[in-house]
Image (cartoon, rainbow, N blue to C red; front, side, top):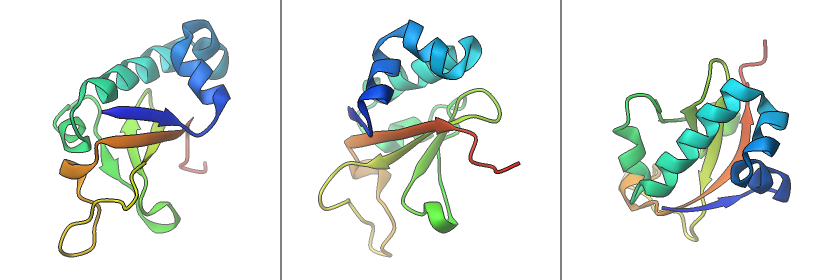
Length: 113
């Protein structure tokens, strides 16, 4: 799958391990980088749903249209489809089997504790 980034800072963190460790700490960086490799190796977003450790899922509410992939609890790698138009199912939802380009927008704890 083609992977892009919301910012140069994120791109740098995913392409330089030292930058990732500075951003998220060693354990989070290791998991985030592994998930990045998983995303790049996948042909489509539906393939990532099949990886048990990734626990990929679509978000709800004000994050509708975004997907999360587990890193180290409580951090998630957050991404969005990066296709125009976004592939949709008959009921209007995003079709992960047709999403072949994504944009990573964050690695964060969005649970608001």
